Length: 158
Ligand code: FES
Image (spheres, protein in one colour):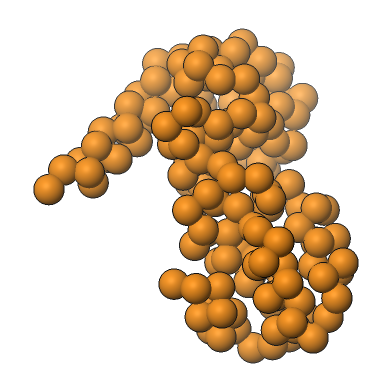
């Protein structure tokens, strides 16, 4: 689907910009927003590219850099840190062989730090794309990653 086709699903109103940018980003293979996307959104909303850039830069869920198919947002806010998030994040980095902020070489995972994800009572917490995972520990994280990897392998089989 092209960016133009995605935009046509939305009324050309500025309050739709966040939803549009989400849809465009989700559609791109690099899970990012390109300069061309920004121009097209600006034209569609009859606004400036600077105002669209401003929104993309303000919200951490948007990225202009290509990222993995699965974005892992790991909560690093105080309540999660109090119950071991820091050491879990280190395990996650080791498991993925990347540092926070990086993408795996197979372009499957990008690991990003996150502010509070709003489920402090279920800490430690992370989000993988749109799905939340609670009460994390090392074993659960390994399990989540291997489920995703298996799922991707199955998709590649004929
Ligand atoms: S502090 Fe981690 S979900 Fe709130």
